[in-house]
Length: 134
Image (tube, rainbow, N blue to C red):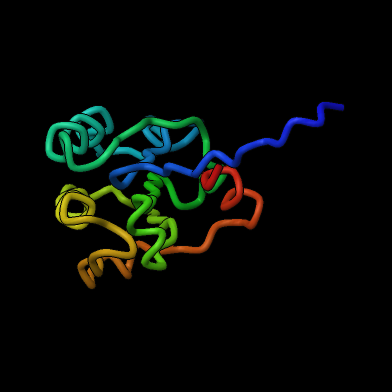
């Protein structure tokens, strides 16, 4: 074992919110009909541009809530107490518009979400919460 002292590397964190869009076994597929799944993801990416990181992720194991989107705070938002917010049944273009407005303005910890998003918020299993927060 080395006797050199290790310097702690400060945690940087994301400089902007991250919007994770489930595109696994149910979300983003024909299992959720009458939704333009590709258009939903494209709209998030186009509208959020440099305001937030948008990423498609594999199954978040909350299939009963398809389509699932998780809005994670920026480092500043996390320092202010923000935590990831899980949104389910995001199958309406107006919900995407509300998510864009919120994440684009700073997201969790920095800006309160539009009240309508309370209808979409759910609590996933502890295991899935830990997976997304990595």
